[in-house]
Each structure stands twice: as C-alpha cells, then as structure tokens.
Image 1 (cartoon, one colour):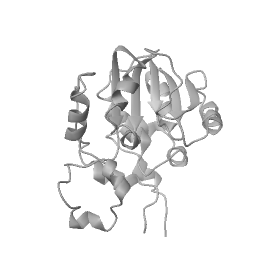
Image 2: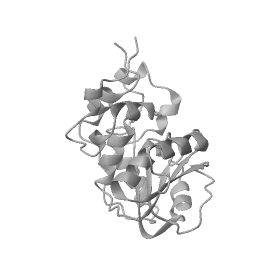
Image 3: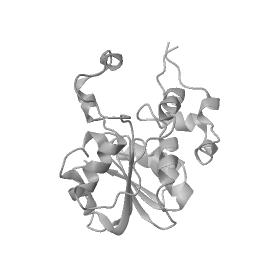
Length: 221
C-alpha cells in the first residue's frame, strides 16, 4: 500500500526554514519524489541571496520552491516550468500570498522568454540533469544571468560515476533514461571546462539518500 510520509517526517532541525511550512501543503506541492523545500534550503546555504534579487527557478514544478525563495529571502522569483500549468501555479502562488513576488511562467528550458542579463541568480531543483548535460546548455543559460550572478543546481545523482556495466544492486530498477544522473565531481568538470563560470562548491548532501527515503511521497509499506 502506498502512503505519504507522516507530518513528523517533514520536520527536521537540519532544515529550520522548511520546517515552518505546513506538511500537507508541502506534500500537495510535490512534483517528484524529493522534498523541494529541503533541497532548496540546502542549496541556498551556498548562495548569497538577498531581498530584491531576481531569481529564475528553472523547472519549478508546482512552484513550492519559488514560494519558499520569495518568502525566505525577499526575492522576486520567476517560477518557470514546462510540464506544470502556469495557471495552476499562479493560483497556488496567490493562495500563498506572494503574487507580488512570484511570477509563473510556462516555458521550455531550451527556449526561455527572458532578456539577456536579467537574473541575479538561477536555481534549478531536481530537473537540470534532463537538459543540462548538453555541452552547450550552460552557454545558453548563462546569457540570462547578470555579470557576477550565481547559478545553483541540486537534484538526484550518483556518488561516483559508473564505469562499465551497471552494478548488480542497481540493475533491477535501472532504466536507460537514468544515464542522465551524474556525480558532483562530474558536474564540476562539466561546468569548469566551459570557462563560463567559477565553480565554488560541488558536493553531495550528507545522508541525502536517507532523507530522500524519509520523505518520498510514494513509499511502499
């Protein structure tokens, strides 16, 4: 039987900002298996976000992370996603009382409707691996970032790259589309070789897999 995690599972001293949010609201806003607020809070520890900044939340899903960024950092956030309705996200944003700071956008990550040098920061949670592995994508994305701006991504990945056949313990559930998953070290090399940005931090979340299991919305009992 499938069941959502308990409210208690969504409260953690590790994530004090996220723990302020209603667990039922968090689960209703889930667009994947991961807790978007925990991921956003962890990522933002490495970003210098300040009130009034313009932030692109790329692949925002149901916009929970966009609402979080606006509330917690006083930023203006463009909640951009291809697969989730901008109209529904707009209603969710209004219900959260942040319509003056979060703007829903329906767009493909490869065809973004923004001006050059528009954003102070770009964040992407649990979707960058689906398009960002393209050797040319960072060059495209960087055009929307102001000089000196920041890019931060977080999502599912590997602890180390798979060399050769898929390991036995992964074969039962590994599918061809999962080859988009990479390690933090791979992403560092992938970005550094472009010469477009300086990579300040590339690391795995400590015990991230345990946190994922603790909060995934489709765990089986």
